[in-house]
Length: 418
Length: 166
Image (cartoon, rainbow over all chains, first blue to last red):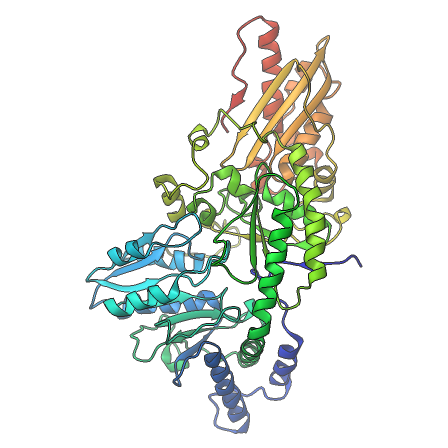
């Protein structure tokens, strides 16, 4: 079989065989319900406790009962945001978030907006960072929650979480962060960073799909959004997904143990890829996102004059799997809201390519991509009616005078909010 | 919002928030999850790509926002399209339909060529994903505009605006 290179770890990752190994007995041997009092139940309950401890160690959470297992990052975001919004209504109904959040946060906030809450959508600069002054100004008497992602899932920009957490704490506002892309790759200490609520997902860190967790700082007021048998302290009723939770625990443990070596290795490979692509002699290739404050495994490129779906498909034909924020390959017809929020003109936003590395990515694979990419880009450019000195006039003229790095304007703002 | 589930329900997602991941490994000879084999063939090896010097007619359609832009050039002799070329910025569907329409129009007289519809192009490609029918199936429009451009030049009128917002 042809060589296959998987550079889409931002979408999902391979489950580490060590994780699978640890999960297996919980399907056929130790299949008890953690709520049962007999030995089967006790085995499952013990496994649950061990996994909880392992995940909490990864994010340096200290006390017991500060972690709720969920079905994944999306559910964790929903419990955090809706739970905090409804649980703190006596204080106010104002929430602060940003225009580049993952749909799990963005659409939850939009849902709240339709139900009587007020949401402030912070813009971002050309690198995808929010402005701390704008955040400080947005906080009001009735603000109950700030929800800002740790690292962006598309462009990989890592926010200044320390500053955000300190500000939120000082102003007495809860701070939730969707850390799905960051957990296991960057060091996170929920206490030092003053994080009250943190969402994470197993399948982004070589664990199984369908399992995640929400860190909930002690004494944080949350109202449940799922009702049932009162599992997970009433915050997430439903019989626990024991094999999944065991897998998450093992995945977290592996990340914690390997991080001191793995993170620098990923950074090295990421920078090799970035240098290789930007230095390949192709014109008009750029890195999206922040040059330094970015995820160790994320390289997000932008190629002028071509469209991302074609790029994705031609790379796929060479066995290379990556992703794009282009509209053409999505169910909507708009380019990624994140890319327009960082000020990219629509045609430029279309030509984006996200490469996300993982534990099993090798240097050979990176070199293979560096070699295969330029001829594919050239092939698409040869087909394109636009090029250097050949802009597209006529339709969509209002877009033509936008600077590549302008601040968020009204139109883009609306787009990001839709 | 209350969701009432039924099998014919059209799932809509909010625009502009998706990052779509790999469309599936594998060689193109069996097509992939989104496009059939014929579309993939023409996308990887499109016919009649390129520009034309002094074309008799040019058609231009598309818009950067939805990510499809196309230029189509024709050479006409005795009312027949003798040469046809295109350049397209867009997804696989946009490129495949461009290639297909040039093949369909070549050698036809202007009347016949002008009657080629988007549906005919899609049918020749053995089908397009529903979402792509509207946004990326611009080639027939570009051909019509190129023919109009040719005719207005022939009539000695000032050159018509050959671009159209879609």
